Image (cartoon, rainbow, N blue to C red; front, side):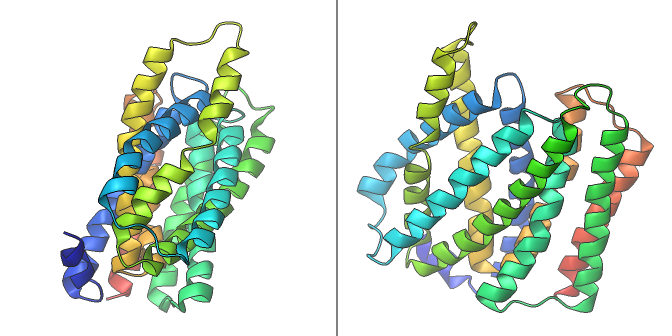
Amino acid sequence: MTEWLISLEGTDTGRTFALWLAVLAAFLHAVFGALQKGRFDPWLTRGAIDASYAVMAAPFALFVVPWPEPHMWPIFALVWLIHLIYKILQGMAYTRGAYTVVYPVVRGTAPLFTVAGAFLLFAETFSAVQWLGVLVLLSGIYGLAIYNLRSMTVARDTMPMALGLAVMTGLFVALYTTFDAYGIRATANPFTFLAWFFLIDGLVMPFYALYRWRRMADPPDPLALMKRGVIGGFVAYMSFGSIMMATRLDKVGEAAILRETSTIFAAFIGWIALKETVGPRRVALMALIAAGAVIVELGGR
């Protein structure tokens, strides 16, 4: 499978495959965000998810995939640091603001910085048509956040801080997207990067979650928490693995833009699972997001 994936790099088939991988990552990323924001404290859910995917990754990293080349260890160290800061900022944002407001701001901020990072690191450029698509997509994403903010009736006093944290989180989404793309391209076997990433990335947050759980007056049932963690671990594998493969097979910036259609999926998840309303204005804004992604994709062909 590894040889087949590598053979797709730079081909039309690889580009099409990358497109579908990015859309799959968008859906799964919205699911992942809802899992972290849902029933339990976001910090506990994050710790349970990280513990789950680290345990699942360990046998693959240690015994299945080739070991990382020596030059990969400094890359893994920086990847780990960027992701740790991202998770801290995300947890802080989710505990202060509504998911349907915070999530679109995070996802709307990320592609701008990612496109800039892809230009600096990979010399990728966008055509005028693609930049038009970016503007259309971002107008839909930020429009969705503003609409959701205006309809909020609770936790409005903490929203300014939540929005600031969401913008910072978006910056670190761009950092990890760009640098992770560099990392997966720097090793001969992409599955080596993925297995070792999940092993290393899951080593910190579980300890903080355990500390937080022990200090709670009424801690949640650990079995129910870990059940959500295992589900989230599988979702993380599929989501992160899909977007990383997409960035290896095609342009990083285009994959990042397509992933931001996750806000559409997030809105539907908020409607179905979190019982949040989706009216005609939200539908129109989601259509704008989808149109922007289509323009970006068609403008690059």
